[in-house]
Amino acid sequence: MVDRFGYHRRCEGSDQLTINIGTVTGGTIDDTGSGVDDIDVFTVIGTAASNSLSVYTDGVALGTKVIEYTGNEVLRVTGMGGNDTFSVYDTSAGTLILDGNVGSDTFDIYTGVSANEIYIHDTGPYPSQEPTGIN
Ligand SMILES: [Ca+2]
Ligand SMILES: [Ca+2]
Image (tube, rainbow, N blue to C red; front, side):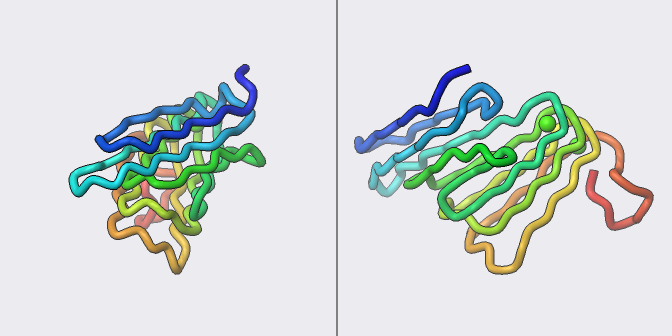
């Protein structure tokens, strides 16, 4: 397992960075390109187990483990296998993309989230028999 890491990029251009959150103990992503077409994408990938993934203004957490991020236009979080729970409190990214992947996943988007766009993708069975459930 990798210990805490830091990624700092201050150049122009669209960057893509992907972190398997299960393989690190925490870290910081700081991406500050400022071009008009500069779309920095940060992707957090969960584990095959059932995860509790929380999205905060400047951080994504797996349980108590936190990866801090700033300056990303797009934040993607995917749960991978297991019955994952996504709790979105806010994000500094303009676009948030959640992907439950396989398993029966739960998405909680709380009032006050400031993202311009939130997309949810998913596969797998319903988490319950309720007609409003998102699988
Ligand atoms: Ca998972
Ligand atoms: Ca799913």
